[in-house]
Length: 376
Image (tube, rainbow, N blue to C red):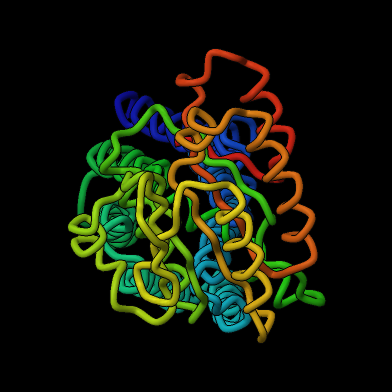
């Protein structure tokens, strides 16, 4: 009994820490304020409280179950936001919650168990849909959730001693949080807000008009995978992406390997030094290393968006332009283009490396200009 209580207490602590860690990192460290992260952090917190309630002798079953169900509702809603199926998910949540509480109030144990199991299975199916939409970046979350679902089903039918379940459940939750904290998954989470806006109020811009991506903690390969994830996210919603590579920072071979060429909704622009003439109108487009040409290109992309649908411009990386042309010239370019961006449905996402700029005012000013900052 003592070992059971110690392991249950440890599971509760780990679950709460998972919730607080998600909340802290995404709302105080990376400025990635997304509804998905809020809902999932709160879900972990309520799940942790439910575990602590089980430590008390003879707890009220309905009261304890309500915490667990509310955690599932929060997670389920966050998943619905990412998949763009919030209304359908809320209807499913409402029906299953009503069945569960009916089973508890009428002492219909079978109905209660079936409701929870269906809840868990549908949730697993939802994460499978997420994996289909966003690829391998979702694998840790999928694996952790399948593990957690299996353990909860074993707990319901008392098929495994509780100490084993509590220990393995802690591992499963850590795996899920590890997957959410993956830098390649961050963009998915931060792009959730517009889906909620589209459901609940008049739609405006899908995202902040100017986002700064601070690089330094991850490898170049992860940066490229992160860019690919942005493009795939846009393609899934039939939105256009323009990738501006500075000085062949992404080679043509790498672009082919990332499958960013030969798609009508993905335009690649290569900014090169010492070219004889520009090659505009093809994909990839080639322009000379000139801020006037670059500024004109961005303005044309904004103006050519006739349908006024959300689109993304990615500059990779902005730091190379700053080192070549000087900070003051880049500041003038950005300040001019930001005013144009705010009048459009275009989102500019610029990568930069704080450590390559000795002048700290560059990073400070850039971050003040940005409406959103993401740290990789």
